[in-house]
Length: 299
Image 1 (cartoon, rainbow, N blue to C red):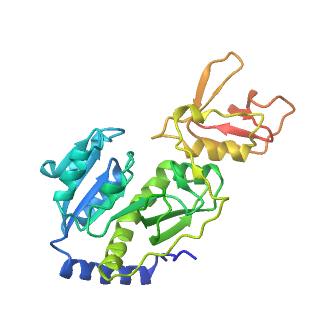
Image 2: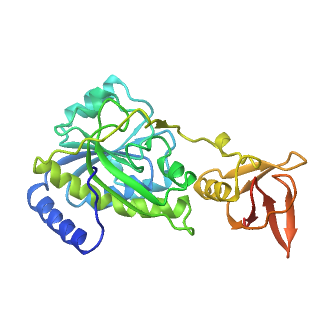
Image 3: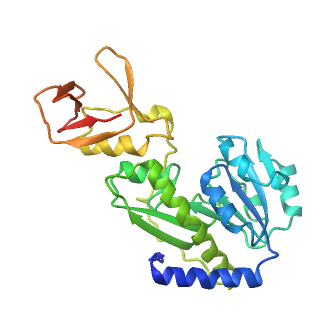
């Protein structure tokens, strides 16, 4: 069974102990950090005073807002991964490579090029949520808890052994934005614990998998269409909050075939005898009928 990271006083004590070890024994270690977004930025801000860190950003899907927080002398922006890049990274002789929300596939020659290999910050329960868009899929599937992991990268996608894992409750008031913020706050501490385990030679735990565990599809904007006659109100509610901003948002076509987007909605027990997808008003509120019950459109 995957080891759980319990977040309360014992977690704080363990984190403090880990930081002491990191400060005393690992201050000259060189790390390579691959990221494109706020998750990686939070890890960088947490580790930059303790390590020599080189930053690798992908030109694909780059969140340019993070650039103002980074040391430009340490940044390499990558358009594609080729042999020249791999050889340059090998020459840097990193202790460890870290990927945190990285959109490009790392070839085996690259993720095995550092002394201790590569760890990946994967924001999904494993092995159930291997693959793309794991946070979005967990919300869409009405998971009661959101799981995240740090695992060692291997040749099979998200199948490597796990150094650290945790989960937290998904509240009805959460959406993908608030879930990302919670995840981004947890990962830096989990990286600290993982680094300590690596230094002490503690082996990560193998995943328990079977044929039922499939790779999740990376979600794109066309995947955001609401199918009213196949989705009940709970399904639509989860769907909307899973892909709201900063993602493109859920959408539908009204009876005049005008495309409309929904960024926020609430569950409703209203269940009028009309076709799914029918828009209606009650007490100056706007509703849409689902396969069963309705949703109240907020935004």
